[in-house]
Length: 497
Image (cartoon, rainbow, N blue to C red; front, side):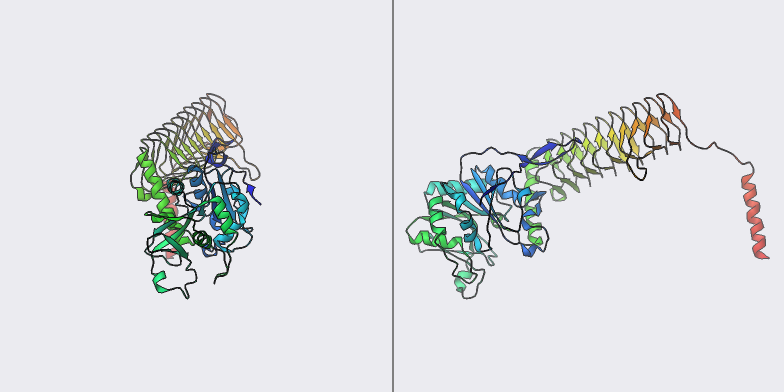
């Protein structure tokens, strides 16, 4: 049974806290094009993970989402992911993606057999692997065009691999045309000259849909693995005189699959390089591309500078001419224009234009900095709104607080927002000046233009324009130093006796 998925293509949406995060619910408009089948029912046991292989992230995006989005960008009219009954991939699939269950792990041909209802009525079908996240829309567009121009029953996409390993070898006849695909998953009994072939099947195909449906229904699993192979359907088509062409590509990345953590890391490296190059060509300066980790759905405006050691994750957005890093991490956060943020860690927060963050600042979820605000050195903010032009320069913690405009928060100011049972908010007005080492015990309110004295523990509201003092009065003890000196002398005499 074919099931539509109710999630959305990666975009951005605002939450009730004002932050941005990936939105899989937006819809990509459909256009006339081929039906694309993506095989994603493999068990993925070599990943040695409780997470299904197809859900492992590649640059912040689930692996299976990469070929789906590439197919959509290439103009696919329908995209169907063939899944295992034991692997729920629904949350990772863009809106409008259909799924069909391959009830048994019985090979690539078995996957297509499970999806026969999907291709009924289609003109052409493109088949590809779900664990090949580096496939691009340009590649799929080219495959569809080549297949259409040739008027072939099937098009086999191949590539030369210096390490063909257990991949299916592509045999050609004397004229150089397609002859067959020899599966080498079980190499016993396969001729050495076949194993020596470096041209391999990428598991990407284009088919005339009726021809595929007819052939795939007639293949058998009479082989060492007991599986159904797409290659056997190609052999049937060729035996019946139907035209099969080979489309050989130079880009080996279209055939880089993920079967273990080492291959996952290799794929992430290639994807990161592509992402960084895309941003640089769009006018972003990445000082050291090898030292910048940017997820697939991050947006960066021109003239921004990304310094070394910076990680940008999720649905992060960075505005024009901002300088992020070195050694800064932003996760699902929005950064305005002309912001500086060195050596800082920011999660699900909003930073408006011309703000200054860090060095060594920690902005936790729900933090909002208005235009021109500052969160300085060793400052931690959580679920706090900081007003326009307000400065929290250093060594402070503000949690669950609302701070007005043009306020200055003195060093070592903290909000004591938790009473052991509940969180409480602190309200600090406009043009307030808290002195160093002020503790604001929530719930408490500091009025506009008010001050607090150094080393005060403020437990009651401070009216506008007032000075809040909450500390013991100072007492000076005259002659204290001489008294301590005499005590030390007397102690020494006692020890010597």
